[in-house]
Length: 355
Ligand code: TXA
Ligand code: MG
Image (cartoon, rainbow, N blue to C red; front, side, top):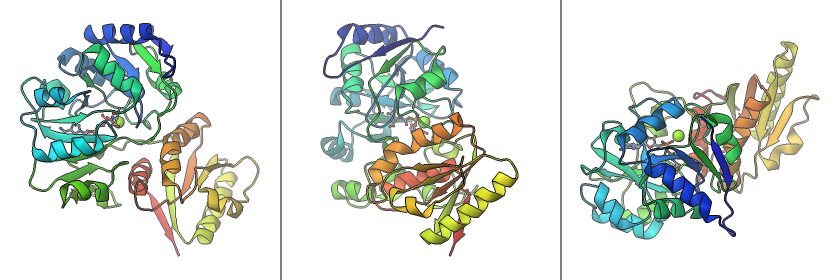
């Protein structure tokens, strides 16, 4: 299939692009579009065939449910069994924005979209292109991240083109995604709301609105523990992974740099290509041999920079055919928790602790 690729300028919108995208969605086709978190691969959430096409294009297991993107509260009422008070409060505070809520689903939502579950994940995105696409098409848009299953989520149109060109009808290029990590997911179907995927909206921010909130225990363990099954089906897959083997080195910053230097030299002796991911503050610690890629991912004091660069950096490692990747640890509060959650998954939980 030929994929239409169109640039859409927010300041100078080309209405013909939106009209074309809307027409494709209404006919059951697929359109990738930017959101404030990552690019999404959209199809009509209420059309089971469109959902099936999404799974096929991504190579995604069909038990991994999709998020339904909406542009107004009426749509929320239409697709959920009921809208709990907690949902109204969260919507008032964080929508439109990088928040996904899991609620009971109504009969309007096909099981193809929810991966067979009786719950549905719902999000109202704030990105003007995403918002305008839902509004003007009149379609509720089921959209997973627009990557091939298992690859890092796309934060720019070029990433989507790499993964999905020729497999979907259209890609709208609206520039880089701002936040760079997927939305926070919170399940509000139980007594205590539970965070299923950490993101830009943190536990503290949820607690300000809801009181007590828990974090899915499977997310807190830094080991891959087969007994702890994440409640969001997608979180169980080894996701976000670069092709090269990624290891996180954690501990005293000088010792970390010494450990990485040794590993890099060992790899060089074996003719393996290494790369290193470090924060801005540590650049002076890494005096490595020529040809070793050292990527400065942003300041440890500005975790949002690290979040927005992470996936592009991991994809860059693939482009450069890196065999072994070493990353400093960026433990922190706020969105730092989401950064470490994604980095640990990308590393398949491989950590070396030095002290
Ligand atoms: O920021 C985002 O949320 C992006 C943009 C495009 O909106 N979308 C996204 O979708 O990250 P995806 O499909 O890559 O991740 C959806 C996650 C998966 O981990 C899935 O298992 C979980 O949401 N999920 C969806 N429906 C669920 C449900 N009913 N119960 C529990 N988890 C659910
Ligand atoms: Mg995804």
